Length: 438
Ligand code: ASP
Ligand code: MG
Image (cartoon, helix red, strand yellow):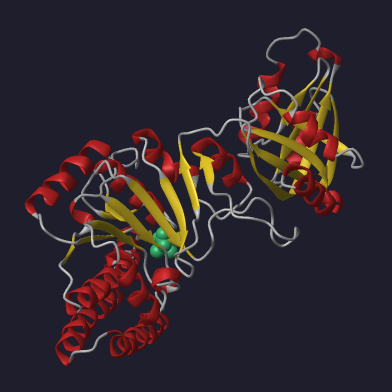
């Protein structure tokens, strides 16, 4: 079975919902569908909760009323029969009355979780009703019946697998199985969620639990591109990445799955395919465990990087120096991205300089500190195993006219990164494109 997940913009209007319905039924084969809330809805539900935390019932009611009006309008556009319109209106009225019921209560994060869960409950019910109206045999499985986190707030994989497979065995012969992304129960049985953007996580968990053939993530872009289309002309979609390459690119904000979201798929060896709802015929990007030998896949850049160097003769032949330095960053919850060491100095890059002053202050106890700001990391991703001769030179050679602050290579088998001035970014990306993807 295939798992198909559609994000908020893919189900953002009645028109798009109809399009999704045709995409999931087009193969004619049994398919498992995971849906996000319609775009904007989760944000509106968070806003309602904000008003309720502040005990502003009027503000909450206004957002609820506007949202309800919008959904009632969708009903008119989505369904053909008076019967289905009536059924869906009744369902929506109940949902919105439920939202209004919170305005009378004490408000805590527990109530907020129940409120934000409504977006996915509504979108799935609306599309199921549409599919049923079209005569498709479609079943809505409540995510709260099988999606669960454990005491560490991590997905409870054995529980999910056991409960979902039981539900599937009890319901054979459907063409479409559908569930809500994002929402779950926690270890105590309370309504909870997998964090914002968590629908991708749901799809990956469902795919792993069902040993699916493939997990498709449908969004509004053509998969991953091999360079930044805002800076480089004629970028091309990358048709294949392995999970590690995808994880490297995720840091660069490439519109790609969050690495934790794809972990269940990665461990279960299930390929993940990124597809574009607006251009379904486009190939998209396939992510799996296979490494394409000798291929450079993509170039990406990350802005607003700061480099910090600490130089100390005390470091020479000393043990524990790195630990002391890293602990300072840890204390200020500042992740380090690139690291380069020499025998008497370390350079590190960070992308969050909130605590830069404090960090520099403490580092000065151990050595002489210098800071460079307004930098960017340019990263080349692909099969960069050290046995492949010449790949790092090709990338480095492209930077021959650009001052390079740091180079990182050999950390993984899939990347080489250059830290350069922000002002040189466009030139670096363009020349890398010319030399690596001629
Ligand atoms: N609806 C949720 C959100 O907006 C989950 C998702 O779309 O993945 O964060
Ligand atoms: Mg999303």
